[in-house]
Image (cartoon, rainbow, N blue to C red):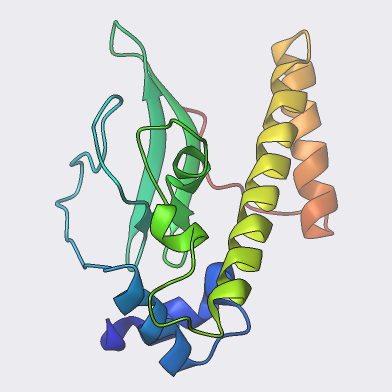
Length: 168
């Protein structure tokens, strides 16, 4: 994981932690690096796992598929972004972040920082999903599009900006 420290430092999950503390936490939670081919699934609905993910390079789409194979993109994660943590923090969920929310055996000082950072990351994701609900709840496609574009213009502080998705 040492060769990915530049990405890890930029991650809000590790905010306020130095390199040694980041590496200590990764060891504490038994983090492993896994590579996936383009287009491969990382988790599928109903999979049993006890981990959440961090994108070290490339991008990952968090999608929801219905019974007929129709896909809905919930979010796009780039290098430094976590995925799966909202589900991992829900009691009784398939994912489990028990190792993060309980004190580690070495009683490391930086564990409290990590928990605060996790809460902050989860709060930001809630705000993003709240924005999405705001846009989706508009009555017409035109209103939905204008709502999204207006919010992006305000967020980026400009009338000219790029959006992460195409019309698909």
